[in-house]
View (cartoon, helix red, strand yellow):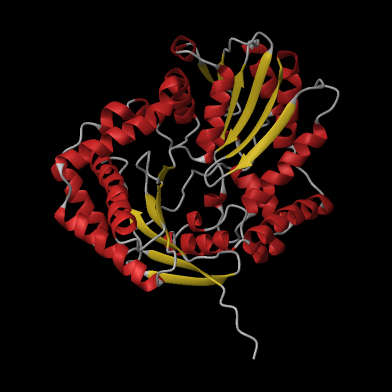
Length: 440
């Protein structure tokens, strides 16, 4: 079975908010963008809800902006969210709610409530953003909460070996590290580290406020100017390290676990950067979906060499990504299973697939994309917002995906198959059942 990852978590947040807005194409064209004198970008969007309000603060800053220690961005996010909740006072009516999210490239804070809460929401966000302070006790409390998450994840062997695989796969950038960092780094993060990261990255030039609701725009802009103060610290351009191709060597990771009863094998390949080569990406996607059926048929139905096969890949928007095959090995020897899988993949890639196979895969992909069709108007608005906030999620592409995927070139499909699978996987991880020793 194949699992696509069409939306990053950041994109999912926007999709959910857009459903809340229920914007049509006409509403989308009526959205307006403003820039305050202090440098904050403000986007207004009308909604059909007479008194519903969404205020969202989007900051183009995440774990990819960390330099030495990991987890600083996520820790700042947790402290900042806590301060927002502490500052919620009599200005805000009962029934409002807030939440936040820290990612690789963005940090998001948002409030739901009623239109009458607008001034209170802006004041809370602006004063916290411009006058950010916290105590050692507050920071330590957030550290304990994050440390608990790190320990829980480390105790899940499947998560542990996937993190190790990701570290090898994305060896050159923060995309190889968990967003919440590691335990040693977390303990060593000082108050100064958090403040410096905030001062450098939480700046007006990286900040977008989205206000969705029937509001007085002039009043809202005046309130934003009042509370989002321009910092005296010079703003630096966003300059994130670009991920190079994988280093070329194949890494094999093995872990014995009492949490599994049969071996689980995962194979990872790096996918080329397809952002400006969408025809090649479409070809790769079609072949991968054919490969799913080929392995199901030849390794499960005929040979019964494996118990199950599933695929994931992260290039729906054709950014630099990865492709993973997860294999449940059953009672077979893992080395035999790996050889059998790689043999089938390399044979299929070298021989190529037929027009009929490619059409069948395209039809399956089109069917799986139907989930987006009822959101076409939503995707219009979300794509527009995404571009304004600097997100790299291409919703415009998703809208046209169903038509796009059927315009494949069979020669390109087979050419991309050879290109991707000419090498062994970048990473092979094996989670094996723990061998229990017999008592002597």
